[in-house]
Length: 345
Image (cartoon, one colour):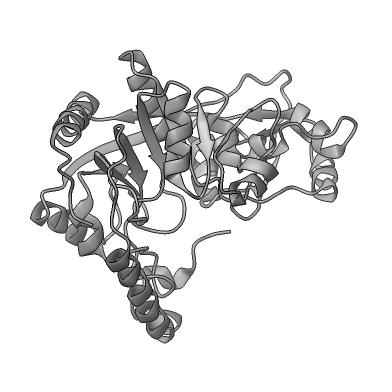
């Protein structure tokens, strides 16, 4: 539900005990990079990834980029692994249909994004890219996949949470890093810090970004609370990586709660859990990601009733110097599409 406490301390007994496992993880990751060489994607591809496990705020940033490219006249498509979805285990790309599919089939984030943009899921991102291009896509946004070396990217935008930083700076499972920091920053083009950079790890991280010539930008999420039909306090529930961020956003919007309950990230709600939640209040508030998992629930079910009684906290992204970030991305696309020059993996 929440990130492990030992990820925040390099001297935590569990972190120390797990270091041999981290070394094995690092060896496997390095071997993957050695044997798998990146291929040119043909069309512009922007990867929105992160350095650590857990939520960093990538999905709102993907939406921000999709809106920009759509407004500039280029049809974007989003490429997703489709984490947790049964259809993502297939070898063929699937275009997500928000009216026909459910989160169990395609994953919650792809289903949520598909309400506004073309989204394709497949373990093979090249298969998704080919399907997107066949449907008229002119630019692809790769949601996650910074650590996957198979596809070369025109731009790597790394999103990081300002409150969590890189934790204790160690690799999984001793720490939160998915890849050794020098390796990750060597291929990063820009770092986007979401929220105030309050974590102690930022001193070293920003120094490392400067050494690797990685541009640093700052942004934040803006929450828009719904208008509730009655004066009754809503009950909040969510199944996301960092539920405390959801609760903080509600507090910042002055939404008084009747109570709250947090589930694990990507949690698939059961009929019994929905029925139990329905006993807590008559009005509910949740995230768009959680609502995606309730979408298309069977008529007459507790899950359907919960969805109908739930309101959404809408999230948008604001980026300081956002125009400069987009100009940096545009220049990289032009240069790397012309000469197929990519940062080394």
